[in-house]
Image (cartoon, rainbow, N blue to C red; front, side):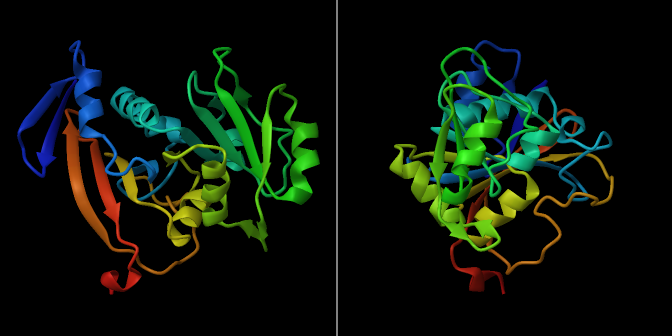
Length: 245
């Protein structure tokens, strides 16, 4: 598979089977800030977070997974919502950390799998749900971190503060839709890395959920495309919502 950069300059092609492919991808995805927050998502052209099988697995590809691994390697912690780990399952990374956000603290139906290689597993939940998280997790060595309860949800700035307080500076958020919207509306996202699968399948599961929110201005920093027509965009988010009109 050949991956081509078409913006800002159509000056690079990467053979993903080449020995230096991972090194070249890393150079393309170096973060602009050492302590930034990235949102990394995959969706269809019609804006759905899930494919025909009801999960993101039917939208992703080997190239997307390679970029996912590259972005993770440049981050200290991966953040994901509890609903996502119930539906799709997740592996605790071999290095770094995986943080699961849960308002209820109920982790009884999670599909998390440890790698056995020392990765750190964290559950972020309100103080009132800490004991429930510990009781229902069923996995030894889990760190449960209390986050202030912001009404019907946790607040993204509080989640970021909790992680930074534990020493995790560079953060990548991988969804699902409600968590993605929470971080965007919370004003803490520096960059959106969006893989767009060449598929029209409606919007049963919108990338950012069904709720409307104020517009946020974006600036295209990079666009890659592979032989299948899948695109890989890096968008920089502005913190000034008035720029989007």
